[in-house]
Length: 334
Ligand code: ADP
Ligand code: MG
Image (tube, rainbow, N blue to C red):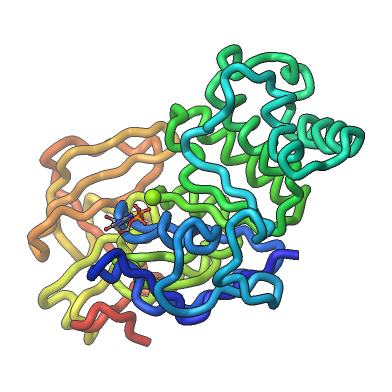
């Protein structure tokens, strides 16, 4: 079980309202990601759910029960932070056992849960080591193991991979997704990284300045961003957001076209332009093209083998089936 409902939850620090009243439902077993720029209130929202911060107004319900004033330890949730906070003088086994010892779980039950968590996290061979003898990724797995043995109604992760290097991050991302499939327990995962959000989430909650900009599956957000903020935030490289007469032709204040939805030609097309810097990734090439119609360069994604020299003349054509239209208020037009 692990259905979490936020009902008009509001948070102020002193006179500053960091989260205006907000409604959100997280279904049992769902992998939900809170994503948004630094300072938008992701950690605060997670800490409110965990009970590490008091709500200023509103109610939090966990599995139908009002948990608004329930202390953190009694909410049945387990939090994993960016810093692993392991005890350096204790073995991996003792680190994982610690919360169960505190809760008075019988020894044989402790052993059963430790073995299960270690197997799930590939830590079986490391149980007698100390944290100092482990890599960063292994330490993060111990921290997750310590959360698993509590058999929580939900796991709360606050940027757990930020301290790891890029390659390890990709590996751990897969491990956490894999773990979610196996445990089928509710997970709420906070990150500023939209790639993590897109690759891991069942449901993404995009936040800006404490306000939910959109809630949806990764593909819903990719296909139909509600506003220009979500349009620019979700997707890599970013959607090109264009204004002026070309947008007016589409009865919009702003039109959006993703780099992968623009074709590039040396002979013909909609917008004439000049190739600037090219980024060759092997699998793809990203061209930055300055078009006469727009003040800022557009990003275009093309095949990895395509080569166009700096300064060459090209034409860009947006795919009309994937053209996004937004009004002056930034909201998506039907
Ligand atoms: P995020 O995790 O998205 O980066 P936070 O939730 O940490 O953002 O912070 C949201 C806002 O609340 C920020 O403006 C931050 O400065 C403010 N804030 C967070 N914690 C406190 C606190 N204990 N006291 C005062 N302001 C805080
Ligand atoms: Mg944070």
